[in-house]
Length: 88
Image 1 (cartoon, rainbow, N blue to C red):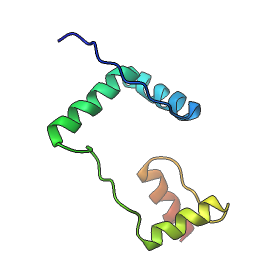
Image 2: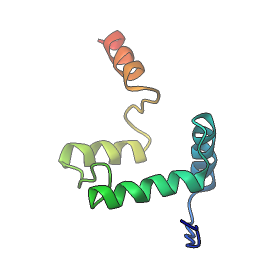
Image 3: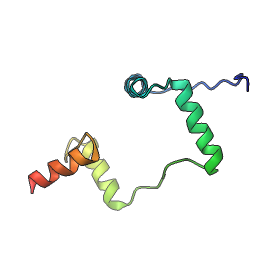
């Protein structure tokens, strides 16, 4: 099938660069990733991941982080859990 449709999306430059770095590592360009996403939208008839309104606890945590309080964890889930175990 010929690719003739265009999508223009404005995103934060830092997000774009980080995503492109990950995509390069898995051998996919941004256009290919968007195509995969859209195919999954069609197959699943919706967003291919859970999207929910944050609960009260999550909203509190979000506010704390935006205010520069609380802890922010980065890394894989395993790395985060390992760090939490070490803290306790």
